[in-house]
Length: 421
Image (cartoon, rainbow, N blue to C red; front, side):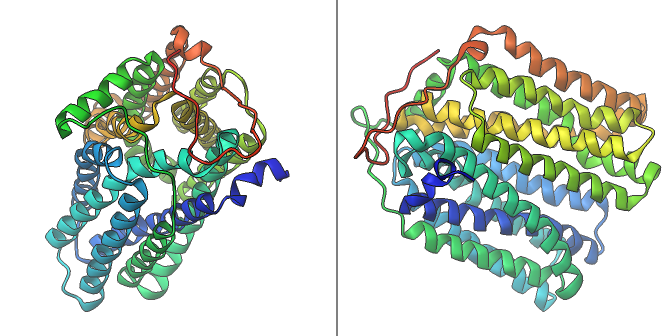
């Protein structure tokens, strides 16, 4: 990597932020693997596992908006530190219950809800904080580098999770996740970032939430692409989580599904590496075009007679999604007012994921009615068309990356004002 691509790491606060988020990403990838086997070891069914995971996901969605308001009211580094410390405790409790043999399915669901709420409180602040840790001229490589490191940590985490569960059991694997949260809290405690600049006194939390929505609504590209994300998760969540293991597992063997997910993650990593070097001027135009590649995975599962083509579709999906995500993050960072950034990210999180539990619940019955391959083709068509249709909006096509020149002596957090396309 060139010096420019690694330049954000010269800044102490960015190192602490990306260190904490990378460690958390590693632990967060271990837990789903461990939790799945914990539910099964307690005699739970696939439905029970779905309910536990859905409870966690629902808690995240419900809490994210509240976390966005808090992230624009109180120091964001405090939100990250407190959330990580609390998650360390909740995961430690879960680990003790599992190791000691006291865990039950209802307890797993309750602790999952608590942990989901605690984690979601900090998610908007975590995304918004990048801008406060580097000078304006290093924002683009900082966003790309952070995304690459977190994705790489997740790849490692999924593999480590499987090894830990097999070697020492689900309880001890979740104990490792608790330790990663504690280490992340230490990193976040060391952050020293400039305070947020606000435009006048704060109103009620509900009024703050309304201000955040108005900030979203005045950017056409934000509204359209959040809507596209809602459709993506509504249709694709079930395609991967429900149909993928069945279609690929029955056609090529269960091991093939794990290989396909590995190819998907490899696409994420390669996409992140490309974004370290490639920063097109019209970032949303390019990112959205590549986002349409996410249709390749369900399409290949439905039509491909050979495993290599399925793996290629999975790789294309991960690559396109990661490149889009980096450019999407950069677009938000550059064009949203700093004191509304956490609230905008909270609406992005809720809008993107609120429909996912519905998709997971409906995919099985709908696919059984119309046929698995036929439904995968529908999913591919919806993803492809919804991505490309957003390009009809001038705000998506014409939004340009600012690409400011770094001025000697500029300080982290001193960014230009926002502008609507």
